[in-house]
Length: 294
Image 1 (spheres, helix red, strand yellow):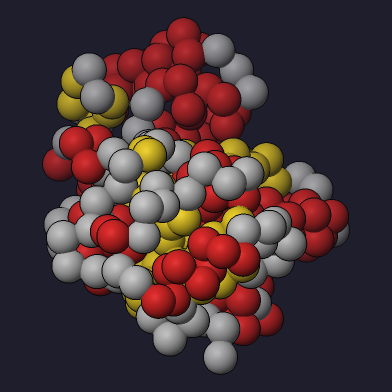
Image 2: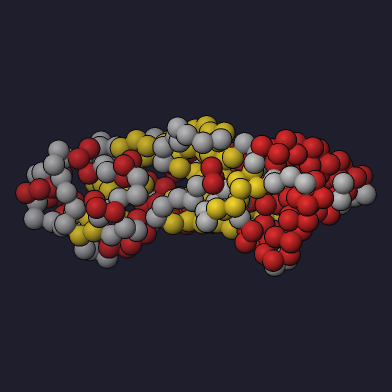
């Protein structure tokens, strides 16, 4: 069996689309498609179901996958014996905008320096890519997914609190003494009609019926609006605690949430995936006081 063609098969199986497989292999999608089709012709079997959303393994493809992965593992052992690193390739991580931008990104330099052959895509946005469909190798989600061929576990708890601009002590006093709905201060928060996760619907935990009057789909925009004096709002403590333009108000009111790690079962054994998870676990342990202030 042609090992070269099997590498293309593995890349499509792991990444789910021709485009991502081609990017990981540093070739064009046409080459990937041609090699996979050639392998199917050699085996006289259809290995993938082609669909607009991507490539899904057929029964024949699923039967071939463990054998191809065993060959890849053997090749990796040979590379290690020759002194070459198997910690290479593309790694795509989907995370929420705030956690990705304010917690992972500032700490990522050490991982990059330790593993220079790993190419990292940090997708930090308002919404998540789906590891079940191989849109990402792993995702840090706001809730535990209940469906799909995924390995999931809690990554960390985190706290949110009510914040005001540091240069408005009068607002701090007003918020401490009266309900926000009667304080005459704008409340900043998410747009309810495009809320990308129900776990972000937390204003009612500050006061029943509380609603935002200045809204954004971006938590980073909300932080900037609060810091600049547009109003008060709820922010993750890891996002706001070290910003000198913000001050916590009503510190006795704390909202608790969790981050959940999810990855497709097929990518879990990959060395680059294991290395990143070990690194991320260490960052979460070291940053616990920032995530859940005492």
